[in-house]
Image (cartoon, rainbow, N blue to C red; front, side, top):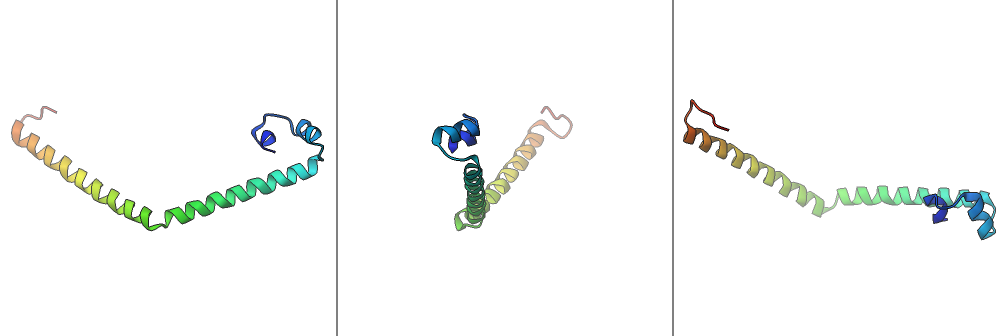
Amino acid sequence: MLEGLRGESSIAELCRKEGINQNPYYRWSKEFLEVGKKRLAGDTAREANSDEVKSLRREAAHLKEALAETVLENRLLKKSTFGAGGDDT
């Protein structure tokens, strides 16, 4: 079945080789893909709500805030070093 999904062989050729009709192949491949989509959607929803993800989002927000403060302090130090009249950046 995977050969057909990957496009490595034609469906007709694959079914002939395996001795099956094309109708069951298409039904199986459709079910396989639907189950995969549902599983991926479920994993995404579960992972997006996990405590670990929430914790990482909080940490990212704190890091962004710290970076913004550092950039602001850096700009203020540059201004005080170069004076109000000459911005050499």
